[in-house]
Length: 181
Image (cartoon, rainbow, N blue to C red; front, side):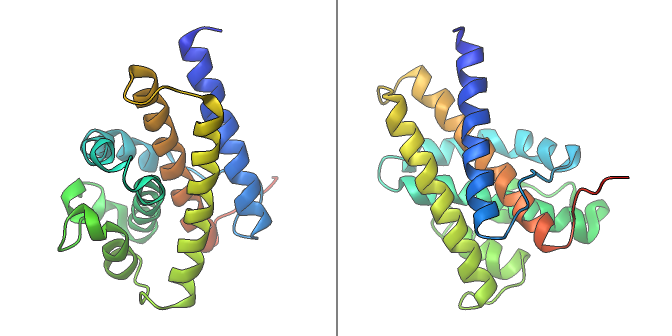
């Protein structure tokens, strides 16, 4: 299998695993909700996020992977609320007072509008943690040597899936659904 095919297959498998998990929680319906606008924002944010992720992944793997989901949720919220206003937002607007260390809390409170101790915040945290654990298990089963080009690409693909899952979760919670016409 060619390298690109391998990474594409890994990414698709991880996406399907996460869709099944989120659907089992009743927070998705088996389909990824997405938008080209939202996906384009990941392409913009990914380089800055990867700088932080590479530094944090060994010490805080679930947090690092999960935060990509929070970013997806934030971008989907902006898209749903007022894309004209938020489409030029910079990565730095996602960071909390402690930078990357409290990005999740900042997004939950300041962008999503949930109290940190709310049911909504707790459910989102549980789902993103569960998705992060699915990702970690899949990465472990790939038996990839740490600190290699291959491990970097797997991390990048994993974070993109988490971003897209986070966005889909937010869109679903805001009432978006695919319907047959």
